[in-house]
Length: 202
Image 1: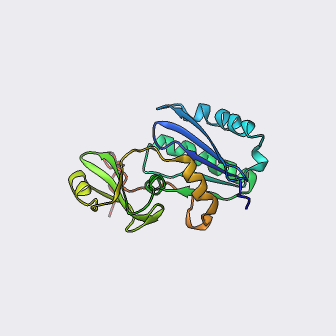
Image 2 (image 1 turned 90 degrees about the vertical axis):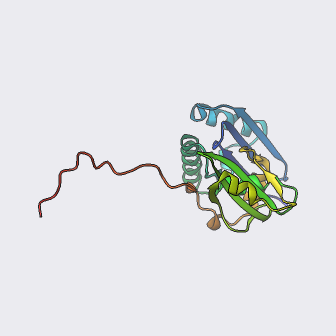
Image 3 (image 1 turned 180 degrees about the vertical axis):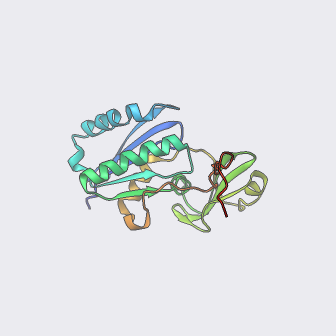
């Protein structure tokens, strides 16, 4: 059975990850460890990946992109690239939350994904099986997150998704269930700038 040719993009961690799921079900991957500068190399690496598989932009049938939590700048780059390609090609773009994407590297369930969110906190989510969430992502104190890992669950703590597994997941997923919008687990730190506000007259 042929698969829709699917491009997967992840720049949420300090690595550029691209995967191309071909119609024959095989996946080719392009990885570059890089903390900054994703935007400068993304399309060049994508063109290398496509050329290596004798494919071009018109062959891509759908795109998947990670939506966070992760690097704010990295997420903006990958989301913008995916949306732009989706609009240009008129093809579906799926946004895959990072904790769900990370769960896809597990062999079976249950799966616990626990990522260091700094400030003594962790992003935490439990999955019945890879890709099937039990209770959604949460931001917990680190100690509470560690204690919440069920006995016998496979624990994933690496921030690097299995981009090939994500491409396979996205090829079969319903695009309407995965809108390409940034996933925020922690509330934004920005606060209104009130210091210079002039009071209104009553």
